[in-house]
Image 1: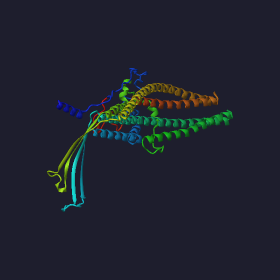
Image 2 (image 1 turned 90 degrees about the horizontal axis):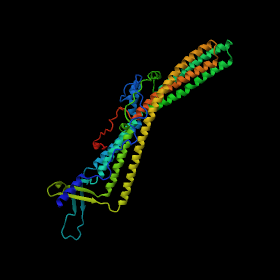
Image 3 (image 1 turned 90 degrees about the vertical axis):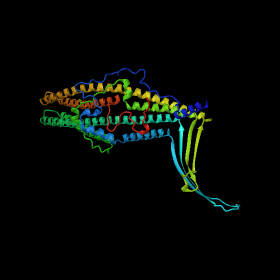
Image 4 (image 1 turned 60 degrees about the horizontal axis):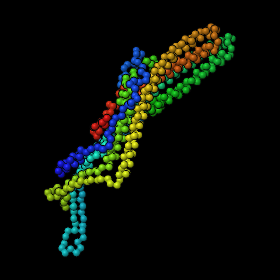
Length: 490
């Protein structure tokens, strides 16, 4: 009877069992619809190619591709995130190492002299001692304390890796949005200079008519006022362009000189219809696509594992310490027959009067898990809201851009007609100046709408979680460390 019981205890010591709750992956929630409130913009002849993993290449600009690659290599925030992944990977390796025996080797040498008072015969008062030993220590993971620690560490590693991926995705999108902003500012500068040239020609025409006695001085001053107002627009645009360039340089890890980034605005305006296509997907699939949600889920997993780690402290801990070596009075005799020594010690530690503190730690771990659960569910709702909002944004910005394109075309015709009618004396200066103002205002709005339309598509791709294939980024969820060769079970 005793032998089977002893074997059972040994088996438990070797295999162990885990206390505490097992992690269960949370779902999207009972109220998640089967489809988005607004269907993504359909892919028609005016839309770019199907969504490639490196979606920004749809804009067809090698300079933009180079900027994204540069940001992935040199951005300091991303480098810090990579360092946090390395830290989490090292912690995972440490948690795994705690589950295995540790072996230490050591040696000692001593020489002492003893007093020989009242000894009737002479003795050698000097005594030498030499020893060498190896010590093995191992804790039996009876209740899964070490296993839960490893589980929590691996989940933390997954959270860090997904945080890094989420930051990389946001960085790529921010580079593209800033590049689009610079392109729009280049177009606005070109439009401003065009308006200055147009108003300059108008001033010359009005001055000639004034000197010929055909118009009043009021016409001349109104024309000059429009010219000066147009000239005053350029410094603000130059300042905004320099600021956008500096932001892009910082994203790419460069000194913010405000001069190093050049964007062909006219080319980008002509290529407005080259939009990255919208990635397909249902609301329920968003949980698998967005790395920020994967990171929140992994944090919840880590918090749940820590509950079991805390509960294991309520139960006894068993450890073994074994040592073997040699001791002798002469260094040359170490390792010889008769000098060997060994010991094997089993330790059992049972918590007795600190259960109140342990239970408080369990309650704290459960509270942290509740916090992580609430944070995860809030992150899911926020992600759904981002997708719904960006779907609306993508739809309405496309509609707005179409209206402004037609308005700018009509304003251009109106300006030409009013210019001709003024020179023939059929209209006064106010009609001409108003037609010019409307044209340049509408054209400026059209340029902004084109940028906003492309930025809306970038925001939508980011909200939907991809597709992504960032330079230097490992596959989703990849763990490349020997100490974390087993992923978190989900």
